[in-house]
Image (cartoon, rainbow, N blue to C red; front, side, top):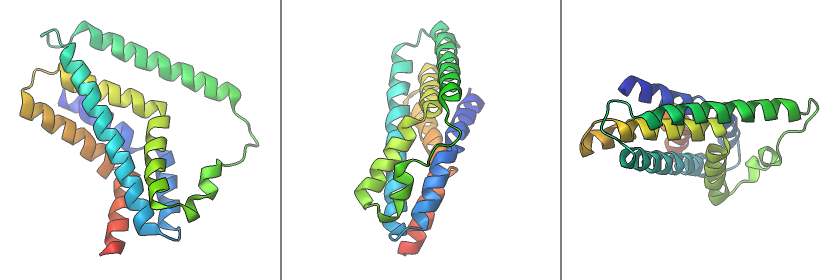
Length: 177
């Protein structure tokens, strides 16, 4: 159970779009404030999404080792990702321009960088499915309160600290000190 949850958190950590955003923010005019705000935005969303899905998974827990609804959550998440993947593949434009927010990273305010962290994290359907699966697995696990809290913190630490969000935040913090 813990191994499954750790793998889901690693999936959140290896998203390529935040890596690009953090690198650009670290090279911007305000690297400290932008990278720290970006990391805070990502962390806030990961913490709230994991908590939300943990509560939902705990409320739906039927007491068995793996409730039936977990199989439906897995199937729905896989199907949703498949649909999004096919739709993205069919609507891709081979000569597309980079998103406009990438050009504005250099002049991004602290508040805008935090909002960008939130937006990039929530706009990635893979992350949403991984949050749902990790939260549901934590909630459905037969753990008491402190153990459930520790698993949710583990997802947060792995999803943020191992990913670009944590790397950028640490570099921004190091520049501030």
